[in-house]
Amino acid sequence: MKVKIQSKEKMNAEIAKLYIDMVKEKPNCVLGFATGSSPLGVYAKIIEAYQNGEVSFKDVTSFNLDEYVGLDETNDQSYRYFMNHNLFDHIDINKENTHVPSGIGDYEEKAKEYDKLIEEKGGIDLQILGIGSDGHIAFNEPNTPFDSLTHVAELASSTIQDNARFFSSIDEVPTKAVTMGLASIMKAKKIVLIATGLNKADAVKALLEGLVTIKWPCSILRNHPDVTVYVDHDAFSKVK
Image (cartoon, rainbow, N blue to C red; front, side):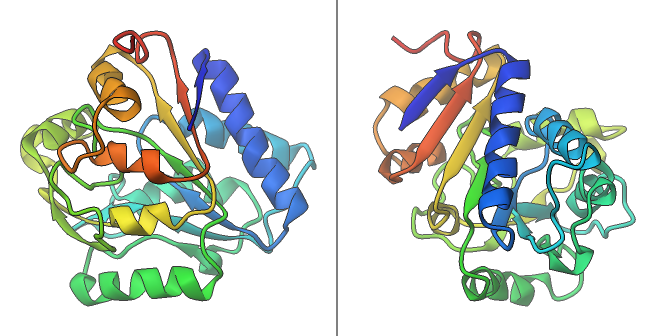
């Protein structure tokens, strides 16, 4: 596992370059995307590169980590809406090749097919992750089994609290989500993780120095052969 302590601006540029270089090297690559505030700067850099004519995403396939249960793509808090608004609408990717778990309809059955679809497309070449204050990655909360595949997760109270800032009130935050499991994420060939701010310091310490345990879902990444963790000084502040 590599660790890079950088400013947010530098890590955004560096991770965006990883994505751009991947597409240039393998135009039909499979990219893994995440939502939340962590990757927004990366997506802005990717859009800028596309608009400058540096790269085309027309043959790329993508998979997102998760989606809230009960929100369809027209809801501005859904992750499909987030991805369209913050990335897909601004590049030449074929929307039919962009995959976000379904949080409506028969979402439990659709979740069971998600890993099979990723496998059929050849697996994820590059996956970006954020990290929760309790060490969750995607919506894999503490005590999620390490062998979990895409599933419906009950959100921890701390996660609901963390995400309440995106909603008018905490009562509007969904309590369930469809998420790639920890085993699903570990199948990605290359992983980059972003952690910024003091509120992520305990999780980063657990990731880098703690035991590999389901109490800290992020710790499973220690078993992956190609992970780079991008942190700012605040997030790294508790690491010895």
